[in-house]
Length: 565
Image (cartoon, rainbow, N blue to C red; front, side):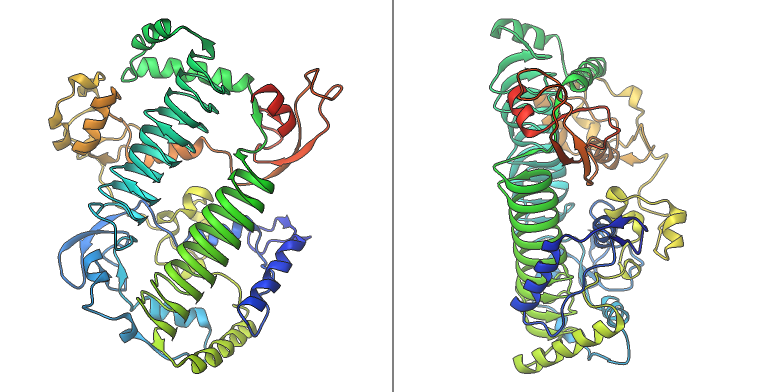
């Protein structure tokens, strides 16, 4: 047992973690082994998350072309910030900012100096993104607005859709279309206000519903149609009652949500959400094998401590990544192999402590490189020189105690409350300052600039004028001002949804709050039903994201299958 250097909680490294680090050393021909971390999994993730800003965007000027742009970096950032067109152009070369490594100083101190001089892209987006100038951390996205951490999305607005079209306000919804306010759903069409639902269409206010259609306020259904609050109806009766429940009406939505919550309270919950897995622990795991303490992952193998990843093999401590192999301590990548302690790199291999480098290989401590190979601190070397210098730097970092650790939060280009760390691992301002991390009091947005009061906006979407897009609204939660775009208003009108009365960040926080924490507890199955191959309470124990003191009824896989599926 070990005590976390950060939060002081006791934790233990499983045997497979040590074997993985030995495997990394051998495959990457490293001169020194990577030491087991001194931080627990949650604190390691928090440290990585300090380097990812998704939603806090601001207006500023492109340092190169001088046009007004939207960026994730404020105007006071010490480094140049380029618009997407300038960043991907041939008008500049990041290797012009190269420097030599100084063995009399620590690696992280020198890296921070490089970080403060090399140009960075205003919004993290692959070169093939089009019509999405207000979206961040995206890949292959078209005509979308204020979406974050998304790939292969088209005509989507707000949230984090994956492989989706025409979706609004969703949180990690995959393969969706024409859907609204979804949380952790897959393969949904024309659905709204749903969580943990799959392979269904025409759902509203449903939870854990799969292979169904035309259902409202239902929980735990499989292969059903024409149900309201889990009651089976005829097609005619269903349509009659549905017509009496317009979703633009706040009173109707409140009543449905209240009855849904009651159904959820009395329904058994599966100890882990997922399917088609073999030897896994965590939550929301799909088509994965030998993957442990991971959350919201799909098609992963021989990995651990993952979060929001797809198609990963031999990866530990990685988040917001897709299509990768052999990563450790990594944040935000796409199609990367053999990489350590880096973030937001695409299409590369053999990457060490680097940031937003694309189509690169064999780089160490580099920033914003494109199509470069064998570089250290953005300086190019011959392959033999590079290997010798890489090994010498690794041994130097081992002596300074930096080797294997992720970048310290003190050198992040973002304040803690700008980063996603504040969403998943929140701290107060006093706690952040006490750790020596940055806090920003003047995060963007206005208050008091609204031109229309919420009471003046009709609930019935049919009565809302298209001119609403020229108005400034005020969030009913935080009072921050926000606006609507014509595409979303057209979407609301098409499906009879109400105009949202809360700003996009508050809507995002509400969806996040519906999830369980990314932590696991030991718990015993709650099933006491007869006919489930046990007398009295089921004796099966498991790891689950439902803490023991939570009120939900939590079942092991066997009992859940017998009762629900």
